[in-house]
Length: 89
Image 1 (tube, rainbow, N blue to C red):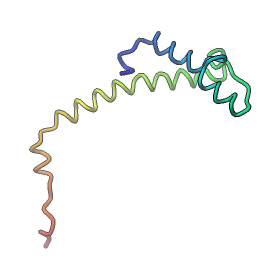
Image 2: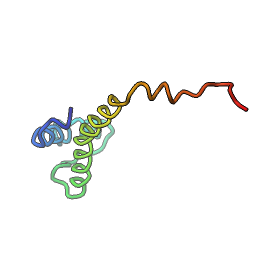
Image 3: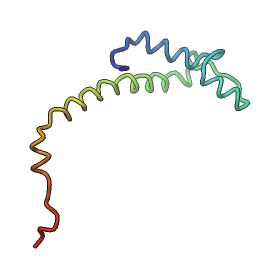
Image 4: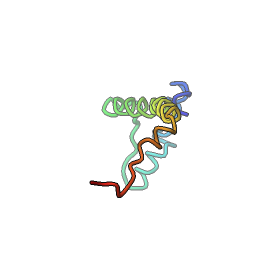
């Protein structure tokens, strides 16, 4: 599903998750007694956030290709690959 979402929507999701006031990540940090961080404005964190967002978005395309390849395997190949047990030398 993430592959079909626009980068604008992905950006909105990550902005919401990483918001310093209402984001779930900062909420967890505050519950652990840490200060909240404005991740989207932090030069230290933004590169990692972009990499994670890109990987998360493109896993959808990889899943589509993988499932299409698996669906295209001829069932006869599974039967041909079976090795009978107990027919050794």
